[in-house]
Image (cartoon, rainbow, N blue to C red; front, side):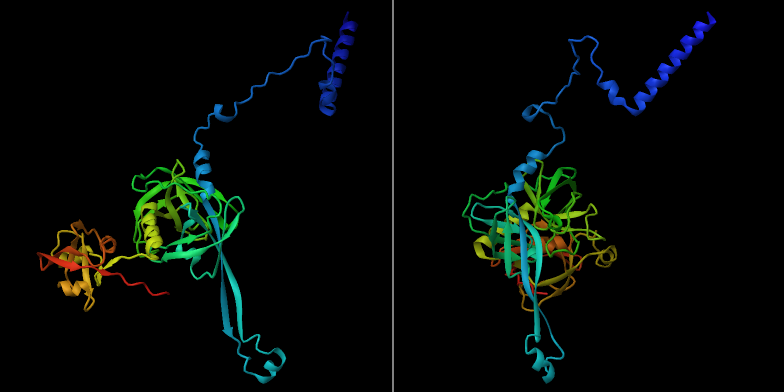
Length: 387
C-alpha cells in the first residue's frame, strides 16, 4: 500500500511539473485544445457601448468646438525688412568686385496668428499686432482654402484690426455671444493656431473679468482665462460652451514664452464696436478733452481732503484743449463724466473715449474741497504716433 501511494504521489508531481513547464513556455498549447463537448463551443459575451446620439458624453464640449472651428482662420504675414548699409560699399575695390548689390540688404520677415470670420461678406477680426507692418497677408481656412487678405482698418489702442477676404465661397461665420453675461467660473474654449501647428482647441474657465492696468493696450477691459493661449493664438476665438464668440485672444502672461495659465482676451462687446466703426468709417473715433491724469493714492486723498481714492487727479491740462476752454485746472479731481462715476484714471479714459466728438458733456469735479460742475465740448482723440 505504501508503494502504491509513493507511485501516485510521484505521478501527480510529474504531471504538475509538466503542466507548469507547458504553461510557462508554450501557453498557446493550452488555448488550442479542442472542446470536450465536441459540438458546442462557448463564446464570451461582449457589451458594446452605444454610438452616435445614443452615447452620453458628460463634460464634452465637442459640439461647441464643432460650431466655432470652421470660422477660425490662420493668418500668415510677411514684410520686407531692409538691413543697414554695408560699411565697405564706398570702397572702390569692393564695388569693382561686388557692385551695388550689397549696399542695402533686404529680407522678408514672416509671422503667424489667427483670426475669426465674423461676416459672410468676408470680414475677419484679429489683433492689430498680428498684421502690424505686414505688406502681404494670407488667410487659410481650416479646410485648406487660402485667400489674399487686405486690411480694412485697425485700432492700435485696442489692438484690433479688421481684414477682408473675397466672399467667393460660402464662408463659415461665427455667432456672437455676450461677454456682458460671462461669469467667473464659466467654461470657455480658446481656438487658434499656436506655434503654427494647426487648428487647436484648449479649454479652461473665466478666471477674472475687467482686467486693466496691465500696460498691454491703451484701452483695457480683458477677460482673463486659464485656457492655454500660446504664440500664434493671437486674434483667435474665445468661445463659450455653446461655441459663441465672447472674446478675441490677445495676450498671455509668461516668463517662458509659453502658456502659464494666465491669458487675456478682448471682450466681444468692445471688439464688435471697434469692428463696426472700422467697417463704416475706416477707423475708430473716440472722445478727447486734453487732460493728463494720475491715480489717487491714500496720501493724495488725505492731502486733497478727499473721502477716498475714487476719481482721477488732473495733473495737467493741454493749452487750448476742450478741458482748458471749459475751465478745468490742474489739481482738480474728476469724479463723474456724463453722470457716470469715475473709479480711477483708466475708467475716466474709457468714459471720455466713449463720448461723441462735437457733443457737450457734463463733468463733475472736486476743487478745493468744493463740488464744481463744468460743460465740456468733446474733441476728437488724436491718432497715436507710430512707435
